[in-house]
Structures are given as structure tokens and as C-alpha cells.
Amino acid sequence: LIFSFGLSFFKADLLSPAQFVGFDNYKRLLFEDALFWQAVKVTTLYTLGVVPLQLVLSLSVALLLNQRIFGIGFWRTIFYLPSVVSGVAVALIWMWFFQPDVGLFNALLAMIGIQGPRWLFSEEWALPSIMLMSVWSIGPSMIIFLAGLQGAPADLYEAAQIDGASSWQQFTSITLPMLSPQILFNTVLGIIGSYQVFTASFVTTEGGPNNATMTLVLYLYREGFLTARFGYASAIAWALFAIIMVFTLFTFRSTRDAVFYEGETR
Image 1: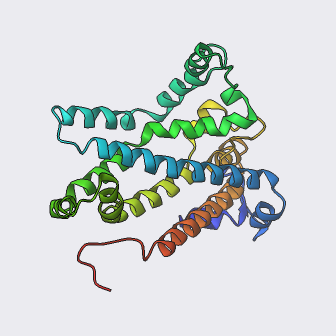
Image 2 (image 1 turned 30 degrees about the horizontal axis):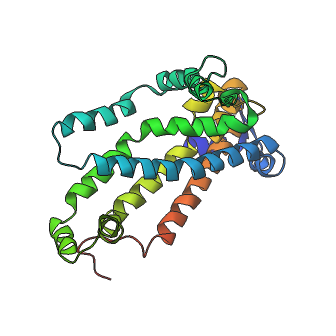
């Protein structure tokens, strides 16, 4: 960390002697580099789309897997298993799904008379396609929600049932408040992970078409390891750190009064 921060003030390729440039890398980043701001835009849109989607899906699956049915351990394993598969392998599978001519999605759409989009080959659909890939990796957040559901006091639900509360009322008045720490935790981890997305865009589109999927970490990789501008890449890394820090602090501050911790006094 210290080395990368120091390196961000140099023009360095790690092969020839580094040249001190002060804040020039940051000035160029903020005021001259349009591609950096495109990467910020793409990554922010990805985060705003993926984090709520993952929260809703992982909570929904956790609610289903919290039921007392035969073989529930098997189903929990099945739903978590995709999270341990290599990210590159997953991206290759989704590339076949999104293939516009012989892909699974367009084949299914053709069966009902709809002409599917070009997905990863289209500027409009490339980023939404990568967002859809994120549904594959809801296992960790699902497990956290499941742990929270199993830790909720049963007497609260029994009292609500006696009072005639419906399933939806129990969910909104008991389940969600009791899960607020897990929701906050998964939200923060989701923001951090989404801003560091790399594999999906690198394997499927390499940032294209026309930089429509150029994420911050992919741009950092290109600047550092393809063009050997390690000083500039370090400046990008610290700009990414600052963005994640701002979003994380905002999340903590904005949810301070909405998160319930059992036994907490204020």
C-alpha cells in the first residue's frame, strides 16, 4: 500500500529509473482522462444495478432455504455451489448464453417469436449482460442472510401469529428489522466487490464495445500491465480506494438509525 501510494507520484514503468512528477498523475486523471471518467460511470452503473439485485435475490433464496423440508441441506449446497466455481469458467459459460446467433437466451426468445438483442456485442446491452452474470455469485450473501434468519427469535413470530399478522406483515415488521445488520453487511461488501469487478468484463468484452464495459479495475490493469504505466495505474488504484471509501462511509452514515442490533442501548 505504501509503495503504491508513493509510486502514484512518479512516472514509472518499473524497468527504467522512475521520474518524480508530483500530482501530475492525479491531475491528468481528474481533468484530462475522459476514459477514466467513463470507467467511473460504467462501474457506478454496474454497482447501482448489481448490489440491489444481489440483495433481493440472495434474501429471496435464503427465505426459501430456511424452510423445514426434506433434503434442505442438499438444496443449500446446490444453491451455494456456483459461488466456488472459477470466475473465468463462469464468464465463458455466460458468453455462450449471450451468443447472439446460437446462444441459449436468444434461442429461448426465438421460441416465443422475439428477436433477441446482440447482448455482449451491443453497446446498449453489454453492461446489462454483465450485470446479469452477477446473479451467479449470490451464495456468500445468501449464507449470511440464512444465518440471520435462523438466529431470529421464534417467539416474535409466534406472538405475531397470535395477533393475526399475515406472512407479509411478519416479514416487514419482524424479518427485515431483524436482518438489518446482515443487509448492511451484504450491502457494504457488495459495493466493495462491485467496484472491483474485473473478470466478467475482461473475459467477455475486454471493456468493449466502444468502452461500454470498461470498469475501473480493468482500466487499471490496462494502464499498469499492458502499457507499463505503473505510476499512473497506482493513481487509478488510489482513486478507486477513495471512491469505495466514500460510498462505504455514506452507507454506514445513512443507515445508522435503520440497523437494529439485539441488546443495543442508545
